[in-house]
Image (tube, one colour):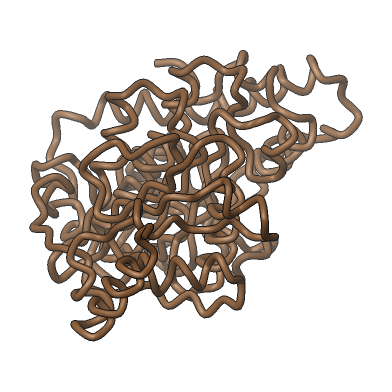
Length: 388
């Protein structure tokens, strides 16, 4: 097997990201290295630990292992699987093993850290190998616990021996959970309380309400204000505690990408679809574990139709569990949405805020979100907005 890190990917990474990776991997004097030498040092440092991990994983694969009982193979992961530790080493670690608990933060190379004082890094944070992240399907924000071992020679941080619990549940139990696609679903019934004074956000909240698990398209022609409305929604949603929010900018102007990252309209449609699918996959994992996730996408306009529909179809409210909400901009509805918010460029042009076309907008089963009285008020407002 090859290293988790890919040279081509590293060559496209900003220097700041390379310095972060080098620091986390314990590369000495990385700030003094030229870019090519820095990439060589990162690959060399990573390949040493990963090679040992893969060799041990292949040797141990046929044997029963604690925390692996069929299913997808997620569960407890031993140090011997990940960092080349021998059974003897593991025994030494377990004699007086110290259990650590914290929040997962993933790195771009597939590995991660347990942050003990999130979101800030500390010298006591614990390294999680890429193999553990993959096997346990960890996502940023997961709270995990497990024993650690002290740093070995040339290692800067202690390493996680195995994953015992994920979000308060035994790792074995999480590993044997039902597939996301097979989890029972129901219509969204809990409205997002956005608490925003922004006129556009308030109008969406009460006239086209969005619930946990909603499938939403913000529709309208160019310059109707749908991208601006999405950004205002993202800001309001980020203020809700316990909500995992991701904003994917795919197919927008390069100037609009900013700190959120993404793919401009110049990128291929496949590259845009891949960026969206990665965010949706992370949201699925959060929802499958009982959390609430929201993925906002701007825009689906240049994404292949099948990929756009897959992204929307992933949204769902899991019965007795978590939820994944997908909110995307597009020139027109795709079909299958639980909410369509259409923006009128003529109305938007006369005001400072994106304006909703109530007649062209609608929500499936609004009474589940705002009650019968609220649903009647929405119907009345739409009737009054009809021409004539």
